[in-house]
Image (cartoon, rainbow, N blue to C red; front, side, top):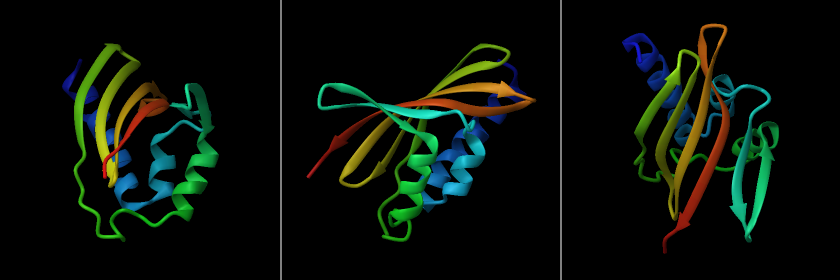
Length: 125
């Protein structure tokens, strides 16, 4: 992985994490490809949430930052398997929900974007 690619991937992910904490759907939209979806398990079934629907929910919910919730997010892993393909594992939280996100990224037109998000949630009381 070139240092330029590593830096660009990290910046894409940091923008994603900032967008989550700030509740900024436009910031989030800027790092996702418009065809992206979010995939997760719900009641033993695969659930796919289209990007537009997720961004709408981000716009409608109070931002973690505005609610004064603590911020604890981090990039746990980045793996680049080719010049245009990468994967990242990140953690973030909106207490009492704690998330592990698996982000698949592609380099399109010289820019790294998230094309798929698969995530797991743990609720702690």
